[in-house]
Length: 312
Ligand SMILES: N[C@@H](CC=O)C(=O)O
Image (cartoon, rainbow, N blue to C red; front, top):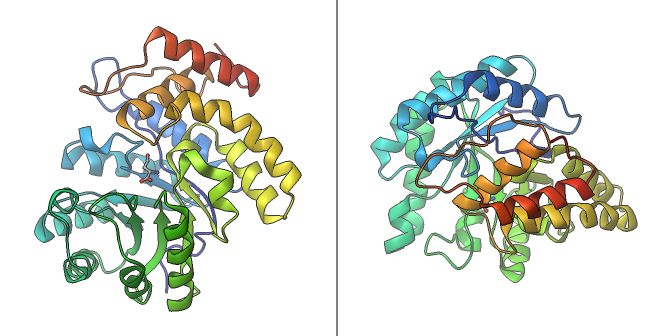
């Protein structure tokens, strides 16, 4: 029995508001979580993603972010926490801490050393199994990295992962459309009940029309309603409407992602956009990530304004 009944829809990877002196801003995080969960079409919230600046948070802070969001949303919206670790024991500790903090599912990012040294399918299967053994009550979500990284999963490995009873969803970000299509097919053939969620923040419409079940993206912490509208249009097969919504999203996407992929600075720009849209009151990011410069803020302001979202 999955720990989350419905993965099909939009799952924002929540941003982590900080105070001006770089502490987790609990009231702001609660407010953001509540606002996101209040959108019809948001089916869960994910903490500790890249958008949540997980790379700047200590293990205790990661659990604290999850505790705050889960406590705020209890009974309203399930919380998934990302796990980004190196070894099996480390991952098991993080998994236990995330579940104790209130996460009911865990998004498993590949360990950093795989990016440097590569990995075998056996390593990956052991890694997922160790996390499952540490937190058997939690569903696992497989976070699929870009095809150009050394942590890219083969279609065969994705099919093997899809057969794991405790793995319920895939957050897929191959950024290679041939591999994306092949991987989706491989997962569907292995177990059609598993949810497939695009995480191509910068290719939302293009990746949504490939037969997926929704989106698990950081971009949805900023513009949840636009992404829900886009998804609803895609689900309804209304390409005209979908293209209209994407036309509003595209300037925002360019201002946030700079015509490229998500990066730490892109997440900082997203906080700048959220500030302009009145979603958060303080756009502080943790060093060494750098805040947007004046030119980037001007571009964000223009993009937020054309979307009709400008509040400041
Ligand atoms: N969606 C990204 C991470 C984001 O900020 C991914 O592809 O992993």
